[in-house]
Picture (spheres, rainbow, N blue to C red):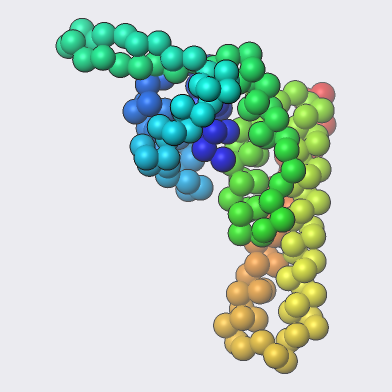
Length: 174
């Protein structure tokens, strides 16, 4: 997910590693807070794959800065990362889906439609699994497990409502 965030952040403007980290934190703090220790190897991997280039520049104060710029291959990789299959793990899914939906503005209408369909399908599946456990195992669950499952069902229901709103907006913009 770090590669997706990096590519999205530098899509419209070149940034230094510090500025990339700051921009990710400013825009995605509720979902993730990558450290420099995670950012640096991800930048290196993206550069090795040809998804971004770097250039060195000396600041007025004499400090060397490295600026990262997205390439055409990087734009294609960003779109691929946004539209690739979602995680089958509900915990990872919600976090990743939120990030992907937050970045969906760089996709065309058809790509957004596929992303929204995928997110909604997984959400419906995970909500159904939670409902099934709650309905079929109710007497085996303790009070806390029932409350958490009920909350999970509500969370996925709300998330599905959000996705449906985004689907309507996407249909209007086509």
